[in-house]
Image (cartoon, rainbow, N blue to C red; front, side, top):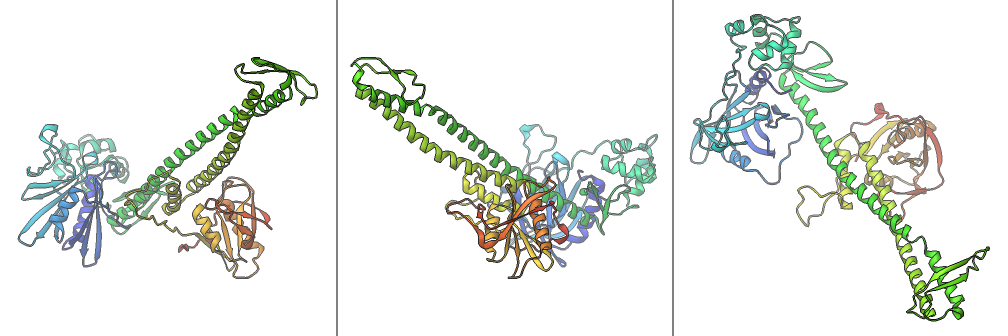
Length: 558
């Protein structure tokens, strides 16, 4: 949900306690509508994330690793100039607005000033504005006089708060009493009380049995039911709240902790979805080009279907050359190659001699034969590429973590299907090494690859006496059992086969045939694509797909 003023009230209070006296050591701007302030406090460095995106606008403490653009944007450069080394004096909420005012003591080499960074968390109107003595020094999103905007936001203009809404202030009991006459349900509260979103109004309604009085709302906003939590739907985080009275939830000691946990999940999921969408788009484009190329090859192959007829005509002309008169435009000859010996009519060029007409058909036959030979090579290469793209598609569809995409991305870049992001020219790209899926069972370690590149690395890493597994006739992860020279029990092979079946195209099937053999019988043909191998001396086990999450190691090996 958008952070309403009620939720921000507690976020700002907790940020004030956490950041007061902290010193800004670094300013990053990962995207045009995102900022990260690194604030050094007595309890360690805090990564304050400020997002002015319309959908996920927020002010929160970030949990994950911070990232940054290679080239700083102009607003980021402005903040670095004015705020690096600044000390946080306070974090306050002006009135009951969706705004956090971060007051900073900024000491430079030659001057000292108090500046205020206003973080406006207001949906599509969200913004970050730096001011000094009430004048705007810069803004993430600016307006101009010509745009007709209600608020003027450009350098040098006076900063003014947004116009107040015609609603009751929930921190004013008298105003609430006047506004709440005759109301009390969620719709009424959201429409009549400032700073309360509909989601919060529903919680207020639930807290007081479907009808809340002015005093109830006043107590609720004042923190009577303060119990920070993250709510869940279908097992996934769906929101963070000051308090919740219904459904699955997980409690946290502070709202900042709940917010951090929620947005950590949201940001990881968004990054996962965005990267998968980008790779999927590039892969679809490569698949379409491959299908189009294969269609052209088959069409050209079809054009050569009369090659044997052309050869036959040349031979019949040669066989009957004595009977052909110069200047004839056709030849009727018996086809001695057909047991029924039918008579065929062969078109001739009257301008050519009989021998030249025969040579013309032979030349055309030779050209068609060269074309067919070339098409056979192209067809095989294209079908191999189609199969290889299908294996990349499999790895994308079965990915369960963003690191699963790293090597698939490198494969697409190598194929030319995807351009590397923010890569300097002439710089050699290093392929990321994502961890294997690693399991422990029966005293043995089982490892499973995530994509073609990792499958190849996994197979190479196995010793001659380790066991190697792969689903029969399906794309699947390469799975290895590290034997350490020991005999591998059937129970361990069964578990490894179930993992292999789960990470295969046949995951939805009841029983999946999984081949297994010693690593010494697995070879990669010269020039083959990553992950492609041939193997011999294998046995086959029928396995039910099973993820075996209970056996998964958290510190997956690389």
